[in-house]
Length: 221
Image (tube, rainbow, N blue to C red; front, side):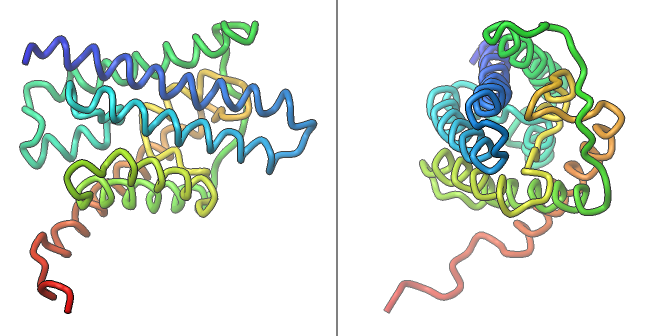
């Protein structure tokens, strides 16, 4: 397949994902009357639905990574040609920025902005490592044809069981730091999130190798 089709799919998918994350956060904040729990529920549901649809629609074209950490692991495993890795990361970051700007434009906000929302501390960093490790383990262990459902469900759950609300994606961090809205992150806090996510991706890969791929228990009795 022409690599430009893969790049286009990753660009569109990452942009749509960030638009869903940030746009639903804006809508939720506007309608929840200050109830953060209600806003987070709405933000979670929109993200889960969008992620499932995007993986189903664009997965056959590019693998539907939408995430530099995922692309790095797939390139390491040989499932993504290493010659395409840089292009994947570039279009994912570009897509994340485009998605943030599109969400702002739709809601009548300043298109160009920076987040002032502080997200920092060891608990937040640990949460990002855990979220990303789990995401990579789910992706790598998902049975054929079930990755879209499992990934969407995992991210929906991780929104609530992690202190950071599970960014689990360096491109998401990049896009969110450009949005001073419910889903944003202060640019000064972004590098630590990315480091934690990359470490988490390595842990998820290590867990995958540790578990192996054989069914050692045999068929059910």
